[in-house]
Structure formats: C-alpha cells, structure tokens
Image: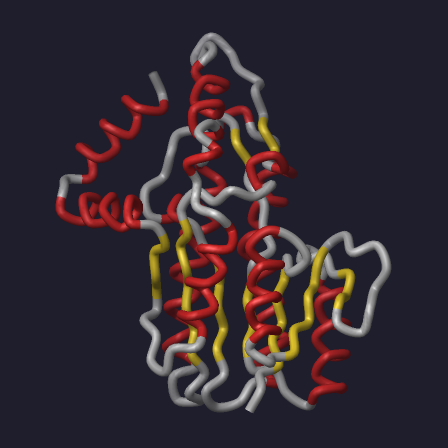
Length: 260
C-alpha cells in the first residue's frame, strides 16, 4: 500500500529530494514549508514555529487521507556566533525551529498514525561532536536525538517507529541561509569569523542532497530501523573516536581546529 508522507521543509534541499523519491515509489507526499508562494493540493505553507499553522496543516491532511504513514521533520536552520554574545530571541528561535517545531509536528501527527508508521527526525552530525560558535545549533539537534529516543520508547507498544538521522555537511542552501553573528570583543578577536568561514568552506566536498535523501528514504522504509543513523563515512568515524577517546581530548583537538 502506498504511503501518505508529510515532509517539513519539503520544498527545498534534502526535503525536496526526499519528496521526489517518495513520489517515484508511488507514495503521496505533502510538503510543508515556510514560504511556498501559492499553496497547492499537496504543498502547504507552514512555519514550524507556529503551532496553529502546524495544527491546521496536519488536520487538513488527516481529514483528507484518514491517516499519516510517514512524517519527516526536515525543516530547520543554523545559528552561528559566540554564545556569550547571542541574543535571547535568536537562541529561542533556534530551538523553536529545530526542536519545538519537530515536537509540535509529531504531537499533532501521532494521533493519525497507525501500526508500522514511522517518524523521521532530521538531526545533525553537530549533535554528536559540537563545534565552537555552533553551540545553540548543536544543542538543539542534540535535544532532537534524545527526544527521539524517548518518543521511540513511548510509541513502541503502538508499533510506531521513531528514527533520528544525523547527516554531515550537505551541499544545500543551508550554509547560505545560516544566521551568522560576527559580533565579537577582545575575548574572541577574529576567531569567530575565521571559525565560521572554515566550517562554511569546502562546499564542493560536501555530500549532495540527492545522496543524503536516498539514504534517509531507504532508512525510513526499513522494517526494524535503529533509533539513530549517521550519514557520511567521515562522521561515522569521528563518532567512533568520540566514543572511545576521552572527551577532553576530542574537545581539545576540535578547538584547535576551529578556534585558533
């Protein structure tokens, strides 16, 4: 039976590529995005920071389809800058989008999901090994991972699967759209901008959204998926090192690479 799929951030980047893949498999995809121009039968304007918009979109889909089989929480954005100098409203927006947006979409979708449905929460490699001047982004994605594990336990008896996926650097407009706060003081000097530029560089070496999307869709169709996946061999290796090496050693080398 073909699936009813809901993807947030489904009109660009990885979300758009996933929508194309699900549709090729014969599934029906509803794409939710902050800016869609004009809504269609399967594309709805939805800011995941707006609970009422989320509720309206999910209820509209559920009323029409009578069920939701797959939810992919792909909407998100990045915030870069020194934690000390970050404004509270920017910090809240980071969590409202990446964490609470995921929480709210799932909250309203779960009542319409049945046995063997699946929730896919897109996290990030930054949730596994944080970088300097990416603290709030890393924290929001780390929260997504732990939330996903808790939700997986709570929905186990209902046989609704929950997976968090941590992709590494991907060649999308995410870097371009990242909010960069270069404000500094004598404590940081030019290290903030140098660190941000270092991470944002090497765009051509990043994974393609097509590659990442294929991996995510394949995982979402597994009969018994793990609770967490990492996409990108380099990031799997770094995660392995992070688990076997003392934390202070990993933080020292990460700081040396991105904070000097």
